[in-house]
Length: 379
RNA sequence: GGACGGGUGGCCGAGCGGUUAAUGGCAGCAGACUGUAAAUCUGCCGCCCCUUGCGGGCUACGGAGGUUCGAAUCCUCCCCCGUCCA
Image (cartoon, rainbow, N blue to C red; front, side, top):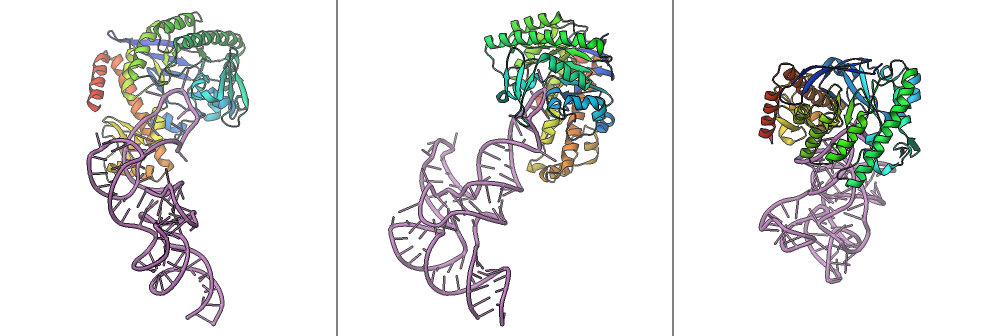
């Protein structure tokens, strides 16, 4: 019994884009999908009610490593699982902690067995293995679990990238062995996705994908992008890697991207994406609009009575002026984070919905061309 | 009227004879942010000039004098502000 099932509803004849339905234990997700990031079981500044009612989020991300450290996966298990704990009725994907191998580089040590992390909270050492990562995610009750991987920084030397791929594959196999065993005794367990690594090396990407295919997973992820490489290279690598993955399974590109890049990745055949940009940049005063970025703290908005984005009908744009948003930011008011995050996520969701509609209506190539033209004009 | 304490760049506040245009903080201005150690981080922040460089010039620590090679820092007088005593 699979953890999730993927159903392709429409495919673009001229690009790799497709629209689908991803059926999870907590509801169906329309793809392509953008997933907001809620690392610590919270999409910062928003309530689950906002996510549901304002954005119609169907799938969001949480982080295994962070929740393992605090409050602890066993605590969450005892409280009925992550969905109940955070009051979120729909689907959850949990990242394995593989990204923390990258982002907490100076607090961790990679060994064959797994990763030793020195907690950023109290300094205590914890060993994360492929098995424990699965175990923690099962305790959380994720709908989609991610296999522990090693995410390298850019640039990575070929040899270290090669070793990293081998390790990631071995870890994925170990994760799946453990997962298959536990799946039988865990009714309603979610799906486990392995992650293709290989830095920016095509042959490593090919080999990694090839080996992971043997696992016959319900879905596959592409990791190791957006780690400092030029954007063109991210796109190139995604373009190369996505077609290596089974057509009939969802493809998840981890950690991307900029608003105007969403359509590009969809064109590669990507079905799922997540990124902290809309939420983090929102809190830092960088807002994405149909006319490009608005850095709301700039003095030019001091007396700007216009809405943030004329073409957006999110709660923020319908009710507040740029001048007010700037004031909230300058004043350090909490409300700013909420209004800004609401808008930025809405911007991403509107783009994704337009992309999906275009695929369904057979006019995705036109949308992609228009997106490129608009991006070129803004730059 | 007397006794103390104090007046520093937009604000608060260090410095108390020599890389001090002056530590910090705030405010201001600009930039960054891509599977979140992030409501974070970085840079600028007296004026003018060569867009060059730990460059040049000017003006600055209440006011005016003075001491000194050199003063925000020491001395004198004055002006203001606090607290306490009359």
